[in-house]
Image 1 (cartoon, rainbow over the protein chains, first blue to last red):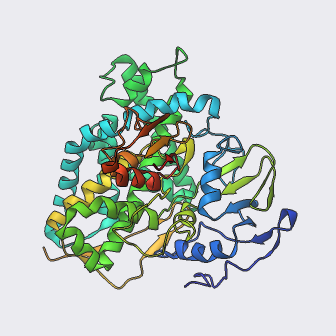
Image 2 (image 1 turned 180 degrees about the horizontal axis):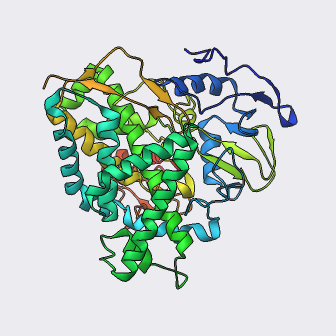
Image 3 (image 1 turned 135 degrees about the vertical axis):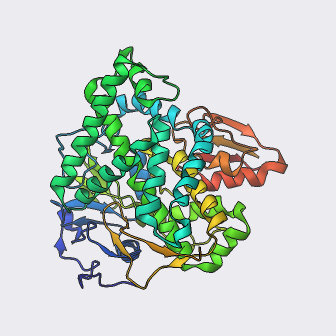
Length: 410
Length: 67
């Protein structure tokens, strides 16, 4: 149980009152802490407060429990994606199609649904499996690796490029960009992050130029597919195209990296459960769902589009609301014994991929990436452990491990 | 048993057709192909159908009639 975090602060202690007399806390989810600390801190916060005003990032509402969070995510008219950046209700940039209002969103979203569907994911699987095997080849004989920075970011980046029809030799460049961008999102080296994001957009601008002049097969080339697409009979604007492609990078790479980190950290530190997966790989899909549930590291934010009384809070149009998914998926009101990882858990209706219209478009692909990784790794490296006693650090915001040194007998 | 899949609530989370493939199937975009319909489930598939009800993260699947 965690009552004080690394800074010696008891996060459940009110710092005052917010609007309408609602308790105000001061919780900065951007801080770093020991592995799983963010989830464990919120296990406590959730049990004390169904909702509160957070005196951080300019002040915003927070929801903590499964039912209200799910309901809010399903109600895009009230809890809009006009901004999803908790510290910036009026960003001067677009994350598309996320920021689009309901009248436009689905038209663009459908384009991604079709390209990240179960059928497409099935077709990508053999090449993705080869990419996974090749990544493992790089370090298997060494007997150790940093899972985060040698596997969890490289392999998903390769799959991402495969899904977009781009050459795999671009992978190291994308890995570098994504590392820089996400450092910035957690406050470290904000300039480097902005520069990297600019480089990603420039890369796609160049690609869009190339594909306009020499189109490739839209069935396999994402950029050609988006250039071909028509929304209400019109081609997609340059601004929208650039944003959609850049958003894919922001959405799809840091996430799979984080989830792989949590999965392998759990398996490295729970040998009996790991052995169950090695002995019966048919358990892997259920284990993946359970590890998604227990480590749901994304904290979506929404902007109120209307005044609403919600969970006792007088929420006003224009204010921001934070809904950490880990708080929802570890809620005892929705899941029995939620802090325990149980590979055979039934009725696992977790919302680790969100809920409502903006449910993660890459969920089917992400699940397949996780499945392939768990299958291929355990076929070749069934026994492994943490390489040292050094503390495992978890960064905040979109939580994840910074490093995960693992060792095995080569 | 009669179940219903809500077209409004289904967002293509993809749990139903993976957990209970004999009751639910995916469409080309990953939504439940049975969304927007109500149908009878034979008794041999009732357990699968119930799993679908309890595993849909959106709560889009419901039991209309248990008989």
